[in-house]
Image (cartoon, rainbow, N blue to C red; front, side, top):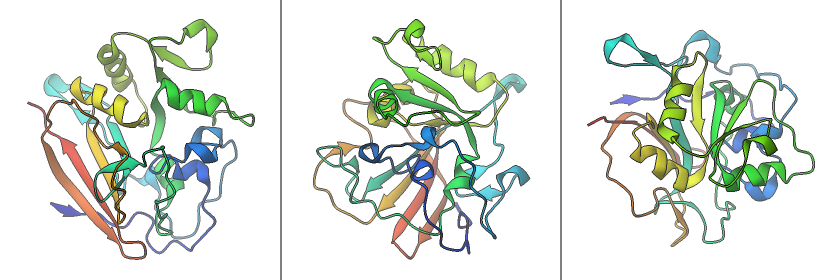
Length: 246
């Protein structure tokens, strides 16, 4: 078990862009989301550079999975904030309990992804924002049985054969793939065996109820702790796990 180097350690405190916060700590009520950020922020002095292949708390970049037979596949990573009692949002979907740690460089985190997997409700929250607009270079894949591809030409709609669709994305060249669809989509893709890492930011807060990390009923999955990190300013604990294959 390794201790993850602090992500963006010694980075001067700066105004956090919501666009970069939402990947790990989504605040749908405070849109715009990460996809709506169209400007490029200047990387602060001392920030880690993902293009150099450094080992961060989110893994090595780029970080392909080498499968049997020599097939190279990109990782699907579920990064999410969770309360100490296991909830990713309050009973009404609220996120006001999440304390953002100033030592985490979210721009460097965003640079590790070029594809995002979302569910229908998350997607509808994105497009309902009047200032909507996807960041250049981001591919958005929406899992929905009701949305029609012809009505949403700017995104990819997956209505069936989810495993085949995700495996096809994983075989393509590019950066890591972010799973950003909430607990239901996480449960579905985990059961299909296409989630590679679970990266939980444990927030020192007890909600007593809400939306769980993994809604029931769900299949069991064994994880292997690959690294951890404590952020003392907020008490947030980062736990990164690899999903073990059967």
